Image (cartoon, rainbow, N blue to C red; front, side, top):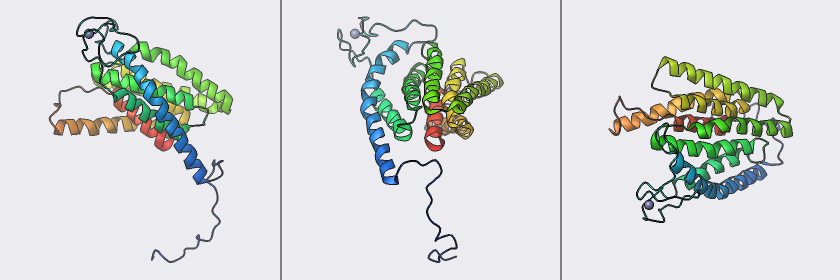
Length: 266
Ligand SMILES: [Zn+2]
């Protein structure tokens, strides 16, 4: 059929999409931009504040948190500077955490700004950047960050359920947590060495947020983590940066898949 021929449905009145409560698309995109700008502005200082946590917990499994400069063993402050104040040795890579946190919070607030669960999602977003940085650095996801995140995230979602009257979403979030953690546990048992205990605990946290958004988001988030991991692994193999026997950390892919699913489907 030629593109310019009118079809039977062309004279139908344009109905607002179900669930759309805002007056116009222009107003809506303006609000999304304003929320995204707020996320960018807040993300940079939050990323800088996370640098100290990433430095302290980027240690091998079982090791005590780092509190001293790796070059001169001088003490480092909680708010970590880029260079050691005693020996001027570099303690952190400039801008990485600031830019990553600003980007994640801008995306999340641009999508969920003004919704009851936005604080919960932003909390998990900032925590996710911290966990991904540590996992990339030392291939571990510390319990010190993940275990307290369970009650914190559940409390934030419960608050969102109370303020937004979303009791069903809260129940689904808790179910999503159990389902995703159990699925990763089974995968971990089937393929030992591929997924660690940290990945299973992280899957539970991602399951809370994705479950809140719905079962399609949960399914997409779980699948996208593996897709991202496969794509990046193939790229690294092609570039000869890893071999078939190399182990790469899975946490950043799990988190990246959850973020993509939340933005696309949530
Ligand atoms: Zn030093």
